[in-house]
Image (cartoon, rainbow, N blue to C red; front, side):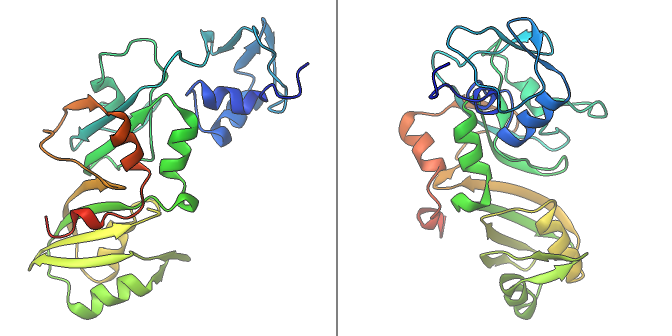
Amino acid sequence: MDPKSPNLTKYLGQCGVASRRRAAEIIRDGRVTVDGVVVTDPALRVASGSQVRVDGRAAAPPEHFHYIMMNKPRGWVCSNADAHAEHLAVELIDRFPGCFLRSAGRLDKESEGLIVFSDDGDYLERVAHPRYQVTKLYEVAVENPLDDRSLAAMCRGVTESGELLRVLEAVRLAPRLYRFRLNEGKKREIRRLCAFFGSRVTRLKRIALGALAIGALKPGEYRELAPDEVAMTLRGDPAAHRGE
């Protein structure tokens, strides 16, 4: 066995099946076969030419990766397998049959805006994991105005349900409209922060990912990214979009 051969976890990530952490869980659950044999060891190295299947479906690194941006509509769920979801955002993408497309991070069901899908597992991890400092910009409408002290406190950080929540930047655009910048995005973080300061989010839209802006893409529309746009999603400084 070539010591440079990827382990099974990394291999599934290269195939776009799942993040490496999730891939390890899938392997331990007995859902993966290599050359017809069920494998439960994520560290198993995959020899060149091996036939790998996940839930019976062949998994192989694509000849070339796909990078797709979408304006996710409200009511659609960012998951590839949610038994309770009526609408999965990935189902809107109908031009790439057979690809293991996954979203880079998530937007919750009631949120909308820019989300990126790909079958490049390493790329997905770089976009989503906070250690890579890829920033996300959100335009947020709220029920009750937030004062300057509340916005400043959001930037310093507050503890809610034992978890530290904070934004990198909070800008008032109108009395009930704000722009928030984050580089992590804990579950429902902006909604929880606004609720902490006595206001309910009525609309939340992601408008930029790294240095890539959503542009004129309409809800439910998607398109492939050019190579320079893929690079833009990995840039953490959205300064080019300030003042838009």
